[in-house]
Each structure stands twice: as C-alpha cells, then as structure tokens.
Length: 101
Image 1 (cartoon, rainbow, N blue to C red):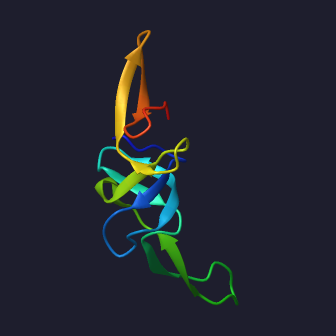
Image 2: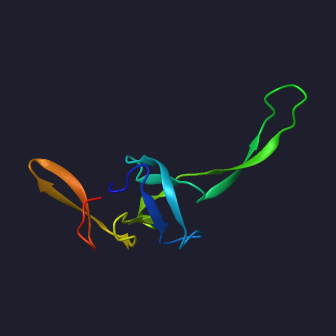
C-alpha cells in the first residue's frame, strides 16, 4: 500500500469527495485507511460512571485506500505515487513533480 500514516490525502470518490484530511492510521492487510474528519459514523456510548449519561459520538471509520489520492507536500497537488531505488534504498516519489515524498 502506497499511503502511510500522517500523509495528507484528497478523497476522490464517495460521499466525502473533494475533501482533504490526514491519515491517522493505515491497515495494509485490508487496504484501508483511517482519515481524520472523513467517513464519520455515529456511535452510542454507554455511561462510564454512575450518574453519568450515555452519549452519541461521531468517530472516523476506516475507508478504502483506493478512494484517496496522496497530496504531494512539495507541489501541493493530488498525485499518484511511484517508487525509485537508489543506493539500495527504496523511496516514494510524486508522479507529477518527481520529487521524493
């Protein structure tokens, strides 16, 4: 998976199309990402202490990584990710400006 934690992404499809957010965590086995402020679901929480009321909170749920494009920190555009190898080390590259990410 080409997206990693703390990358900024642009959502390209679905209900949140056109919005940007930061990846909070990535799940490579299931090809899903958790993006801050995107794909919010309401969750009913039970009261923790006696006398406290239960509440409804909105939390982000994982979404498909294919629905998001990486925003290059150098050129600021949503782009595809490529890889280059130099000196035995593999690193990610922006396909538009060909700068290391």
